[in-house]
Image (cartoon, rainbow over all chains, first blue to last red; front, side, top):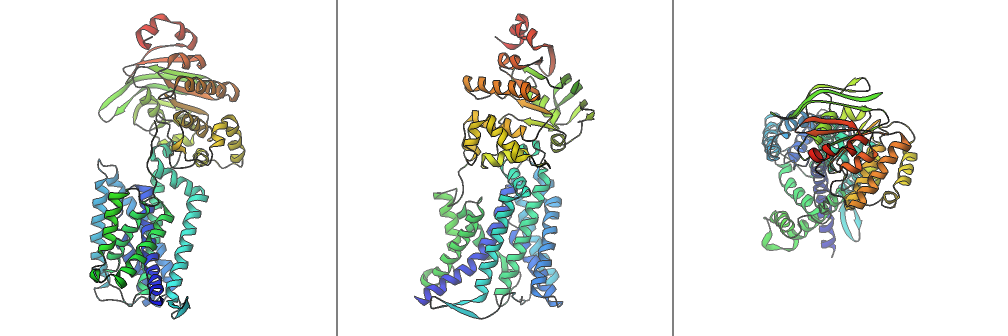
Length: 294
Length: 235
């Protein structure tokens, strides 16, 4: 029983990271209508910036904050310089191909700038563990969960309760009509990319801090799990992305512990989930069916 | 006093011209009606005014040239464009849709305006927390009107508001439009296929044919002109 609870908490610890990256994917999907395959590598780059700043003697929290600001600006710049010029093209595939190119480019740049050796990112959370329900849980895991919950609350507030959020949602729902209401659609898309990049920077930096070491492959499996979480959540819901991130994380941890035949190839789990979702319920658990009336 | 003046306006999509030398005036406080068959260029005329398509010629709104302006900029000058398809933000609530109408307003009377338009359109008030896309076509058209009014525009552009609506609903809608003009002094440019209803609330009418203004006259005269009816309006 203790082992089971420990694995569940392990899963939650990973799950919040998947949820967080899924959140960033959903945000761009909702505002731009494309899947940003470079999301993970953008986060990786930001993580290296956080790490580099800590090696220069900056405190961890400050380093992550600075990296988030840089990511925010870079996200906006990427939308403006790389995404927008191809967006007006005939096929949405153009944007997808650009994000795939960005994936490869960022990964190579990271190795070029920061080398290929594994590095150690300090964690902003206290080390040690506490006992919950007779299971031992790392304080870092609890820290991660708290930060992600705060992030969700912030985003929910931003989208549902502010004027900027209303504009973002308007552009996501009907960009042409939004423009006729005086909303600068281009600026909103940029804001969507900027926000997602900042969220990714936070997620990447925190997960790197939780691990014993990280290198340029850090975000690749995470992106697969995040895609599974986003698909399961239906790609539109913020809470759906987070909850499904947790579901995927817990399912993964339990698979590793209890399903021996999948030991070592547990990544088939998120891939299987994506398959099942696409085939059985294309709108996911929390997605809405697109209904249009004439 | 003319609020909007188009002179020699030509425009279209890419290489193909749809509008040829359109001259059109909308007077302050009036309802101008543009009639014409499918493909005559009615929608394109509105899109030219809103800056959705590039145009040649002159479009002046209250002394300001609209040529070369983006839809965002035109909207901010006080022109509310209700497009064909009603521009509904389907997955947002009715309330959010209404607030989008007022999204660029800085004054403190937004809430008061919300209550006011929910008063005019009680069905929207009843459904304010419902997803806008789940409402009927008629209700969505009411929402489009109310949402446009939330911007406190000086000119309302309406693109075939009767499209896809049942006759009874269409009549109700035009009654509301007439009231908007009479009671709130709203200046309206409406593009329609339903000539009778539109001319009933209109002051001046234009008939578009193949991208040119074929006939223009007071709404009354157009309404009673047998020759125009037969030649252009098909009834």
